[in-house]
Picture 1 (cartoon, rainbow, N blue to C red):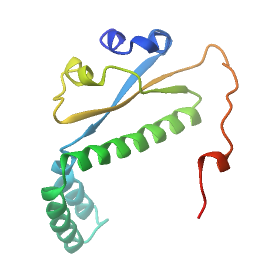
Picture 2 (tube, one colour):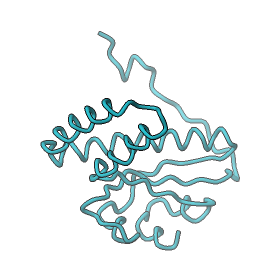
Picture 3 (cartoon, one colour):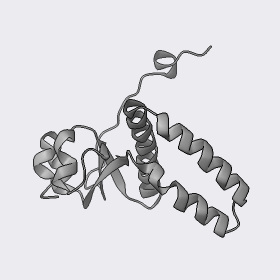
Amino acid sequence: KATLAPLAKFNQSQVETSSAMIAVFGDLNNFDNAEEIYGTAVERGLMPAEVKENQMKKLSAYFSMVTPEVMKDTVLIDGGLVAMQFMLAARAHGYDTCPIGGFEKDQIAEAFGLDKERYVPVMLISIGKAADSGYQSVRLPIDKVAEWK
């Protein structure tokens, strides 16, 4: 938390009072793990070897041509989904969380010894037991934010 504090200047309350802070990053080289993931699936009998080979062939072709911008968008979406699931699981176990997007994204990877060209910061999450219940929030009605066609 001490390393994170100067990088989350506008969220000091969460940094100081939470039980822990979690930094979620997306790995731009995530395809490097595909062989291990699919290989393990085959070893465990969860996937036929032919399917693994077919998937690896298709994914290799895709990842060889994907642009850095598309890859960054992909890991940001994936990281957001991971963060959401983590927050839901934490809540199910009685913990409170707060997603934080306001922090020094250009400095955080290096501050934690990560390669900033490889790891893209997605968000921070504070976690703990809330001391106060906070206040109720208001959301816009669905018809104000979505259009159904």
